[in-house]
Image (cartoon, rainbow, N blue to C red):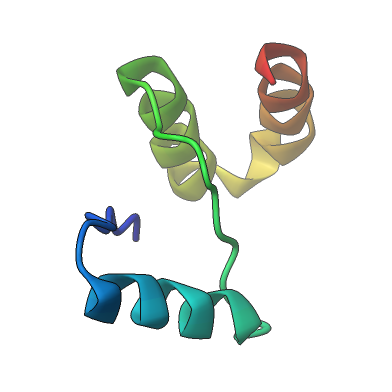
Length: 61
């Protein structure tokens, strides 16, 4: 699941800082492009291609 947080309010900033402390959550500070979202969704659907997807993900960063 990908959640986008609008950080204009202080409450949202506090919540984002809390989320960063959770061990099971990966926080991306940059916005996700539609292409990156498609890669993440395909990674979830097909665990067998995780190595290939990980290589693609590393190359676009």
